[in-house]
Structure formats: structure tokens, C-alpha cells
Amino acid sequence: MDISGTTALVTGGASGLGAATARCLAENGATVIVFDLDATAAEALAAEIGGVAVAGDVTDEAAVTAALDATGSPPRIIVNCAGIGTAGRVVGREGPMPLASFQRVIGVNLVGTFNVCRLAAARLSDAGLPGVIVNTASVAAFEGQIGQAAYAASKGGIVALALPMAREFARFGLRVNTIAPGIFVTPLLGTLPESAQAALAAGIPYPSRLGDPEEFARTVKFIVEMDYLNGEVIRLDGATRLAPK
Ligand SMILES: NC(=O)c1ccc[n+]([C@@H]2O[C@H](COP(=O)([O-])OP(=O)(O)OC[C@H]3O[C@@H](n4cnc5c(N)ncnc54)[C@H](O)[C@@H]3O)[C@@H](O)[C@H]2O)c1
Image (cartoon, rainbow, N blue to C red; front, side, top):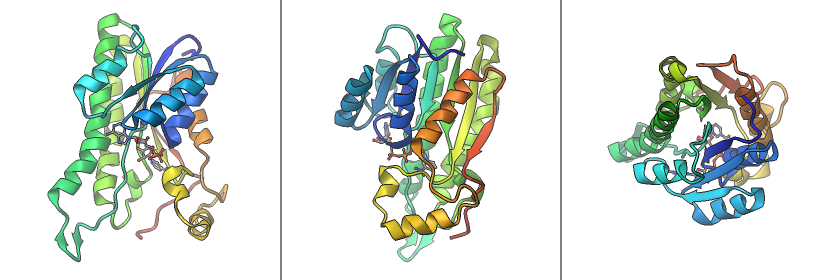
């Protein structure tokens, strides 16, 4: 699918992997709707790339609907990057993990991703328009570390969504693929001391460095342009495998 001339929705588009993706899609000729909880950052990025900012929560139907309607024609490229990562043992020093903590991570990462997919797909189905969805999982979906039970479960759910949705949406030509990133340099990770970042990088076989968000964005571009890729999950991780802790 050609990027030029299309409309794209990028959730979590104000920061990190989402921001790099929004920039890349805009550079390649798309009008990008930057959807994020952080209104100020979303507006700044939208202004930079000539896109449209919509502030809201991916779990909120009204906010997502407003984003899908922001440019008049439904976005045919949908990239779900909004997500949160929290660490916490199932049974910690203070007892069992509060159920609300588990539900919050599943809510934002998995339910939020599903919410955007279902509403975006309904628009394209009604309009009879083809398109492509790219969801963001994590290598934690496959090798969740101690303390990542909630995060890994949310990302495992995102991995499992790709095939049934790709099969269902084949009817109107909407592809669904997932990227499972390893460890990327985003604002989140940038807060770690350089020594900690170097230790993380040393565990990555090749290239032995952290991922650049621009590499994630180029993978989104490849997925959008490669029409034969559908229902797939792509690890983007320099062959890293997370250790138990
Ligand atoms: N950075 C990494 O190493 C890495 C690795 C694997 C997976 N991921 C995944 O990639 C995605 C992006 O991560 P990042 O590192 O760019 O993070 P980030 O924190 O830089 O960006 C995430 C963005 O999502 C927004 N957001 C959070 N909750 C939201 C909600 N409920 N509704 C709307 N927007 C919301 C935040 O405001 C933020 O702008 C996440 O899903 C994360 O789990 C990141």
C-alpha cells in the first residue's frame, strides 16, 4: 500500500516509537493523526509534521472516535503504539499484586489496542476501504521477565490478536501485523543511567546496541508497503532473548 496521500492514525504518537513512526509516515506523504494522552506533546509533534493532534485515552470510545473522524476520511494506516510498562511481582513483599494493577496494564495495552482496532476496522469496513493495522507488542510477550507478568500478558494478547483479526478483515482488505520490539532508546529508557543502558546493550547479540526508534518506524513503513505480509508478528530485537531477571 502506498503511504503517500493516505491518512494515518498513530496512538501514543507523541513520544518514543510512536513519535518516530508519525514523523516517518508524514515524511512519506501521509497526513498523520497524532493521538496521545499527552495533549501538549501531541500538539507539538502534529505542528512539526503538519498533522492533526487529538488528545485522549485509547480505552475511551468517544476519544478514539474523535480521532478517527479528525480528518474526514477514515485513516487507512493505523499504528498502535500507546502503552504502559509497569514492573511488579505477582507475589511481592507486600503480598499479592493488587488486581487493579494487573487490570490497568491489560486495560491500556491490550483493551486499548483492541478498542482502536475495532473502531478503525468498522470505519474501513463500512467504507469498503483497504488498509493496514500495525500493533506493538514486545519480546516480553515471549520471554516475560520476573516482574513482567502483567506487561507480558498484555503483550501476549496483542500477539494473539493479529491472526484472527487478519482472517476476519480479509473480506475488505485490511491487513493486521504486529511488531515485537526488543529494547529501544525512548524517553522511558533514556532515564536509565548510561551504565545501565550499556549493560542492556551488551546482552544484545548483534547489533550490540539498543534499538533506535527510527528503526521501528522503518519497519512500520515496510509493513505498510508490503502487501503480502499479513497476520504476522515480527521481532525487532537484534536477536536478543530476555533473561528471567
Ligand atoms: N521502548 C522499548 O524498548 C519498548 C520495547 C518493547 C515494546 N515497547 C512498546 O512500544 C510502545 C511505545 O513505547 P515507547 O517506549 O515509545 O513509550 P513512550 O512512553 O515513549 O510512549 C508511549 C506514549 O503512549 C502514550 N500513552 C500512554 N497511555 C496512553 C493511553 N491510555 N492513551 C493514549 N496514549 C497513551 C504516552 O503518553 C506516550 O506518549 C509501548 O506499547 C511499549 O510497551 C517499547
